[in-house]
Length: 259
Image (cartoon, rainbow, N blue to C red):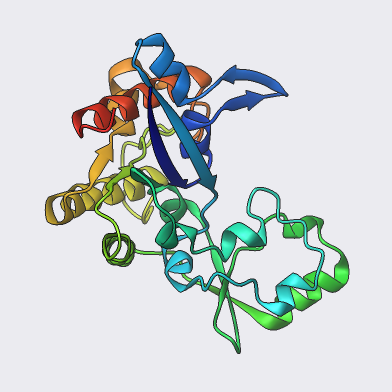
C-alpha cells in the first residue's frame, strides 16, 4: 500500500476536510482516508496538521516561542503558541503541502511593539485581567492583509518550501457566498466579505499561473452542489461540504501522480 505524507498548515477548512469534522462531539466526517477507502485506492494518507494565523506571521516565525509568551499560561484555543511560531512547514518532508486563503482573508494580527514578532491572541476575551493588560501594553494591531500583500507572502512561502522540496503545493480558495446576504447595490459599502473573498480567489488564480501551485477550488464545489446545502456560515461548511472537498483533494493528488 502506498503511503502519502501531507503537511497541512491551515484552519477549519483544511482540518475538517482532511482530518475530521466533529460537531457537538459527534464525528460526522472522518477525513481523506475515508475517500481513499471508498474509492478503493491502494493508498493511505499520513496527515500532519498545524493551524495557521496568517501568511505574514508564518514567514516571520522563527521556530521558537518568545519568552514573554511562553512564560504566561495563555488560553489560545485552536492557535497554540507552538503552532503560531512553528516553521515546520519549511523544515519537514512531505509529498504535498496544503495551505488555504482563509487565514489571510479573515484573521486579524498583533505585533510586538519592541521585538516585532507576530502574535494572534485567540480567545483573549477569556484571559485573566493581567494578561489583557500585558497584551494592550506590549502589542499593536496591524492592518488586515491586502490581496497583493497576501499573494506576495504566499509567493515567498512557496519559494521557501521549494528551496528544499519539489513536493506539490495545494491551496484552498473560499466560497464567496455569504448566508443571507442580499446586497444589490454596493455604493458606500466599501469592501464586503464576499467581495474580499472574490478578490483573493482571483489573486490565487494568478498565483497559480505564475508559480504552478494547484488550487483546491472550494468556490466551484459549493457553486455546483449548492451553498444552502453545504455552507453553515461564511467560513464553515457542513460535513457534506468537507467530504466533497476531500474528494477534490484526492482527485488533484491523483492527477499529480501522488496517489
